[in-house]
Structures are given as C-alpha cells and as structure tokens.
Image 1: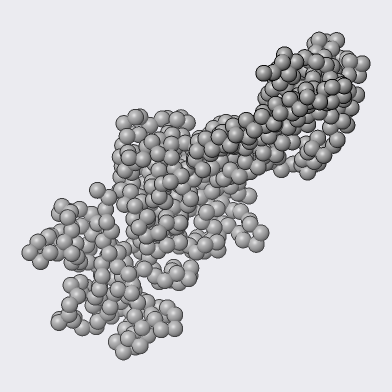
Image 2 (image 1 turned 45 degrees about the horizontal axis):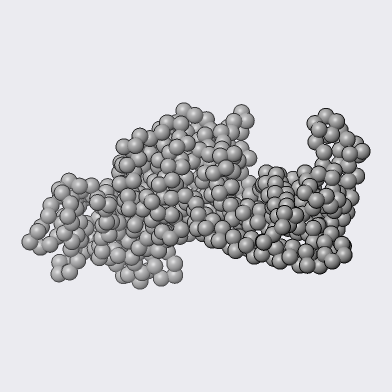
Length: 361
Length: 228
C-alpha cells in the first residue's frame, strides 16, 4: 500500500504546496510548528478539505484529482482518522462507538478481529460504558479502536496526544508503538512534539510554511542540524534502533547494542534480541576530547564530529556520528571554544541519561 | 366528577393538540435542520417567516386560514372537491391552526439543540463510512432529542391554550372544535356559567401542572440517554 499526495491550496495569505509519498506501513510523522499546514494535509487526505489543486492516490485508487474532477467523498475513502479530541458519539455505548465504522465498512472485520482490537487496546472493561465519564486516555484508545475497526487502508492521526497530560499520553503511546510494530497500516502522524516524533515515527516529513523543508528517516531527521534550525525547533539528541544484547544481572544492568557501540541501561525485563528504540536528549550528552576514565557515567561513546551549529546566545549543537548512529550534543559556546571542536575531530560523547520507552504488555 | 361536556372538551383539546404537534414535527425537523446546517440566500427571510405566527395576533392567522382554506376559498374548495378534506368548521381546521401557531416553538427548540451538536462528530462519522442521511438519523436526531421533546412539550402546551386562531377559523362547535379555552369562553358568555368556567379553569390548571411535571421527568431521562 503506497500513498501519494500532491496538494496546492490557499488560505488567505497562507499557501500550502506539498508533494510526498508514503511507501510502506509504519508511522510517518508530519512535523512542524503550528500553522505549517499539517492538519490541512490530513484533512485533504480524509476528504474533509477540498484543495484548490491536487492529486491523492491511496493504493491504486485515485481519491482526488482536481484536473480530472475526481473527488471521492470521505465515507468511501476508507481512511481512518483519529482526531485531537476523541470525538466519541456521546449517546452510544463504547461498544456501539467501536462498531460504528465496523458496521459500515464494505469489507467488515471479523468478530475475531473485533475481539483482537478490543484486547489490543485494553477496552474489555469499558465496552458497556458511556463515553461521558471516561478519562482522556480511555477516550483516545476507544477512538483509535473505532478507527481501526472501520477497516481503513491507512490511518491519519492529528495530534492525538496533544490534549492529554503526560500520564494519559503514556496510556496511549505504547498502543501506538505496538500498532507501528505490527506494521500492517501506513499511518500519518501529525505532531509538533519532538518527543512524540522521536518515540513513534519511522519517517519524518518536516513542514515549514506550507512546504516540505526536509524528509527522511527519524534517525537522520532529528539529528540534522540544518533541517531543525529551519523550522525553529531545537534538534533532538538521538534516536537509536538497538537490540538487547546482554543482561548483567549481578549489576542490575542491561546492554543494548547498535551499529556503532553499545549502551548500558538499568536492567530491562526483555529477552535477548528484542528490538528497542532508545532516545537521548541533546541536553543529556556531554563531550570530551580525551577518553574520560574516572567518570560515573556508564555510556561513553567514541564518535566523530560532523558539524557545529550555533543554537541561541549561549549554546551550540554539535552533531556526532557513532557508526551509523547520529547524536547531537548541546553544549555552551564557551565549552566549544575551550575544546576547540571542529568538524572531523574525534570526540567522546557521554550520555547522562538514556530514555527507554515503556512497552505495552 | 366531570360531566360529559367537560370530558368532551378535555379529550378534544388533547386530541387536537397531539395531532397538531405530531403533524407539525416532520416539518419542524426539516426546517430546523435547514436553518441550523446550511447557508443559503434569503435564510434570514425564511427564519423570519417561520417566526411570524409567534408575533402575529392569532386572530389574524385564523382569518388568513379562513381566506385560503374556507370552503369557498380556492385552495379550500379544491381540497374539498378533489380529496373531500374540509378544514373549515372541523376539528382538522382547529388542529391545523394550532399547528401553525405553535410551529415556531418546535422549530426553535429543535434548531437550538441541533446547533449545540459538535460539528466534528459529523466529520468523524463520515470518515467512518456514514452518509449524510445516516448521520442525520443516527447522530443528529438522537443528539437533538432533548430539543425535540422540549419543543414538542412546549408546542403541546401552547396548543392547549390556543383560542384566537381556532375561534376565528373554525368557530366554537361543541364536540368538534370547542376545546377547553373555547368552552371556558362560551361558559362565561352564557348566564350562570361562572361555576362551569371555574371548573374548566381548574381542569386547565391541573392539566398544565401534569404537563410540566411530565416534561421535567422526560427531560432528565433524555439527557441521561444523550450522555450529557
């Protein structure tokens, strides 16, 4: 299932002009500041916005082609849409909500699949309840289930977590990760949160003023100093795809290996070989030009400096490569000068903290 | 407790009011949906025209009905000749007059509750495969139910009190068009009818109280249903 999107639309002075394709299942993040045109793009894909000019192809079906006057209405597009506010139907039980799209789907999911989605999202205890008194996290999970059960060809997620507090976010994030890892559906995830993008996305499309500023894998995009500077967002430290390579039970630690080195984290209850995405914030990376020996940090990685970019009056971002993995360290100009950092130099990155995301069980 | 003429007037009032409200309901739903969900040129004009019965003296409405639907009026004559339907001097005329007078109450209540529905629900329903009609039946109607019931109850109560339009259009015929207010009026017109008028007035008051209590109860149940 591939999706290609080309759109041109005007909102007063604001012009949207984008052209991109999503090739495979997994999460593609539409990332950019508010007002960059992210929501308009997903609305156009869902058919809720008719752009001035455009062509959208989902799989083999042309759902929009303004030149040929093709416009498939939203109800026939089979595109699941998770809105920022869950938008559950208040007069229906949770189960009736879940079955709303399911009943109307041209190819209806089986009862087994229904039960699977219900258990995947942990919704069994809620089925008979009304939405009014449920928590934001519960509502979000129900809305996600409702969209999944409508047998969509792709899923649009428009900042589904932005209205939730951290605890509620963590009620939904693991489910989104699990959905990504099942890799059955292409998902387009709108967000202005670097943390969410770093945690969830496989591919990132960076939007700025209605245009695509850059696109690429999440590992490259979030450590690309130029891309992020363009959109006015601080660069992320690192997003690294790792595998559990060893457990050091006696020390209470686990070892995560990646192409370029290994990271040591507090003991994880995961079998060897489990794939884990870890994140390291730029603020949590220190730099040394000589290998530090007497140091409390466990994670000292040898790497090469790629680029140095000014970031604000006091700080500079230093891009580092460690094997195939990319890091960014945020340090002060003063330190930068003192260490005489320059592209091409060898350095040691010290990660003070490695974020391992909790997984859904 | 009540004599046969009183019971007759009471039942006639209830029947005319029920029929008037039920027959006007589909039109009120259509008008409310049109006014709340679409924009078209002349919308404020239509809105104003729909509210006209609220501000016109009921006698004028009755007179206009007489002009158009009287047996010798073109429309009234045609209906009588082709369909055998006669509004003038019949309970049907009383129901029609009541329906027209109370139409704005229904439209207004339904429209307000339709406008209060989150427009985003329609969008999500569409992405889940629902057509416009499907959305109207399964989302708009149930979510507007509190307004529909409130409008129907208000209109029903107003129907029970309608006097001017009925007496002008269909006169006061016992057992045919003499509803409670008309019966009270004619009792007052006849010598020694004060006691009768008082009894009928008490009946009206009892009816009104029962109606208000029922409305309150219905409202609570429906709000629970609508998940608010």
